[in-house]
Amino acid sequence: MGARPDITAWRPRVEGIDEVFHAFFADHAYPMHTHDAWTLLIVDEGMVRYDLDRHEHGAPSSVVTLLPPHVPHNGDAATPGGFRKRVLYLGTRQIDPALAGRAVDRPVLRDERLRHRVHQLHTSLERPGDELEAESRLALVRERLTRHLRDQADVPPPVHDRRVATELRDLLDERFVAGLSLREAADRLHVHQAHLVRAFSRAFGMAPHQYLTGRRVDLARRLLLGGMRAPEVAASAGFYDQSHLSRHFARVVGTSPGRYARTGTGRLPARQRPAYERRLTRVLQVVGDHADQADAEGHGR
Image 1 (cartoon, rainbow, N blue to C red):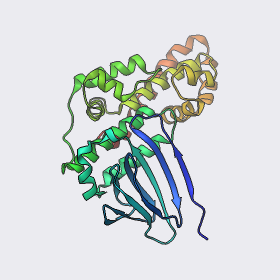
Image 2 (cartoon, helix red, strand yellow; image 1 turned 120 degrees about the vertical axis):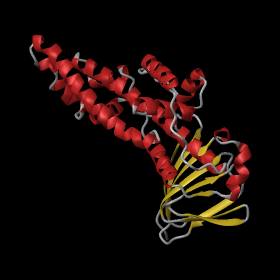
Image 3 (spheres, one colour; image 1 turned 180 degrees about the horizontal axis):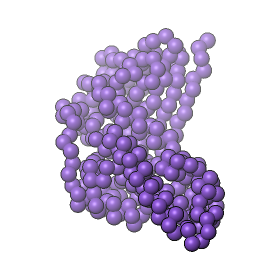
Image 4 (cartoon, rainbow, N blue to C red; image 1 turned 135 degrees about the vertical axis):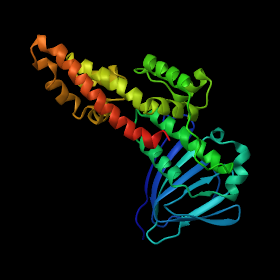
């Protein structure tokens, strides 16, 4: 008897993604079936063999597989020990339905950059509160999938659109606590979502979600130094929960919110606090900018 399957599935709060499905199967074989969504698959261990439109295909760990809606397919392990996979079921409007035939003909996409972006998208979807990051990564994944299906898989030229980037920054400044979806921003600025992400990243050296997080961390610092407890700070600064605050706070500032509050200006004489805060802000801003720019190089291209 084979190992028990290990399955996790959820519907994220990200428009365009109907379901996230992570699974390990030792000996399960899918019968012929269809989905009413685009199936975006990456394999982390083993290899999957499947039939699509009466043609046999394989999905090793190095490729991205895209199956169109309503086309029958099956699937089972092509290697001993089973397979581990991660799947995104994308809404039918995420990719032009006219491209479904091309996906049937060529479901296997050999694109290392695309596979890495799909992996990053899965990672962001596992963290509640990082929806803007997930939406941004989905926009770039969707753009690259479409380019593959249209035989335009070359890297698009850099986007130079300072006006749009500045307008998005203004929107984020207005809504950094309440949050702003990428779709809403794109609708208000009348541009495609991927263009918005590329323009902002090119202009400011960081992705929109990184800028939003930085604004929230800055506010959290001020609230912590003012004596507010971490759970209240998380809600007041726009974080999903205290864990969400702690993760991003430690990444940007280098310590936990609690330790930061205990070692901050509250322990200094009142006359020294303004200078300390100004000096600390400058240092943290420089460090944070460098860290975010390094991350944006892989996300914004």
